[in-house]
Length: 467
Image 1 (cartoon, rainbow, N blue to C red):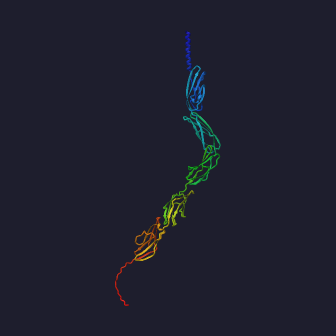
Image 2 (cartoon, rainbow, N blue to C red):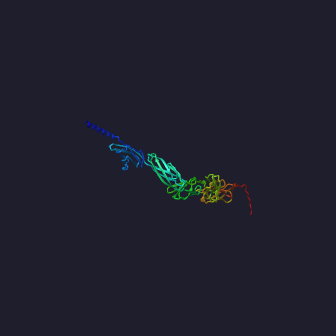
Image 3 (cartoon, one colour):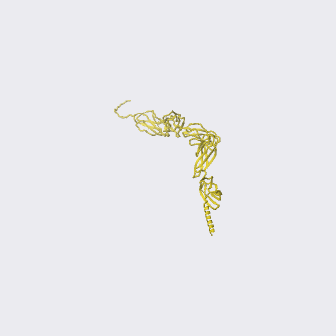
């Protein structure tokens, strides 16, 4: 019985010790807690005793069978960014089992690209990096190898290449969490554009010629004329209406880039202001004087005003702004006034108005009458000899020269009886339908004598005669 109890007790103690040994196995592993998509993450079980079995679950179900492994040391590549739970289960031959889990953050590996512009010899070429990185990450470092022994650590680089040839440019980026990408790309550097300009100083509204030099591989030539206008053609003329200093450019398009250069500046001088105003542009011929008011400044060196009747008023270095002229053709007419100015820069401008000057024909009043000597009242007939038909006359006024009131009718003949003593001359005032007036005085006098008569018999004489 003692022996039996001893055996039973020994078995009990052995079982308890065995259970204690099973509880001593512990699952744990070493691995980075941060990684980048596409990278291999190495996982190492901390316990690698013989008789131990390993089961890995990388938490990446989208990877299929690759999500699992049974080695003590293994690796797994995550194709997508995210937070993954990695679990290790160990089991010993003595049936001891344990598990351990850790979180792993995987960041998106940057996708790198770069572009370049103005890639021509002896011009500042710009290289621009373009990185698509994780929203929770950022690019910390840039490493450029520019292919000409130059390097840079900036996101954007400006470099001048001395030769027109191909260059191999390399770029590597490293993010804040250590994710990297690199790119090697061959870029072509083309010939520097060049062009000639026909004139460097012109007057407003003048034409300037532009000629781009032919370049190998060029597909288009575009001129920026510097006045908000452009034109695509290798040889082109342009008219400048904008004044001041103009800075034109030339853009040359190549298969992989477009290069721009600044051309020589152009000075566009304003043309003189030849605008003017006509004062009283409709007048009668008699005493006509047409004046214009000019708006130019004192930079004008020569002024020419044509009044359209053969008379041209020319003035050098004019200091006034008024020019007047009287037309001498008695038949009148319509005239177009033209102003031409030239300034100290040699720029000229011409201006004329659509409205014309109108000079009405000369109105000539004529009056005629016979020379009259009358007694006891003289009747005189005056004749209107004005150089207008009656239909062209608006008003006629006869002034007789005595105290009698003037008459406005008739138009062509005037008749008056003089009853006062004296010598009188008639006068005619006429107005035509254009509003022009003229006056004429008669050349022949009217002389009238009026005697008072008081007849009576003072003495009666009688005579007898006999045969």
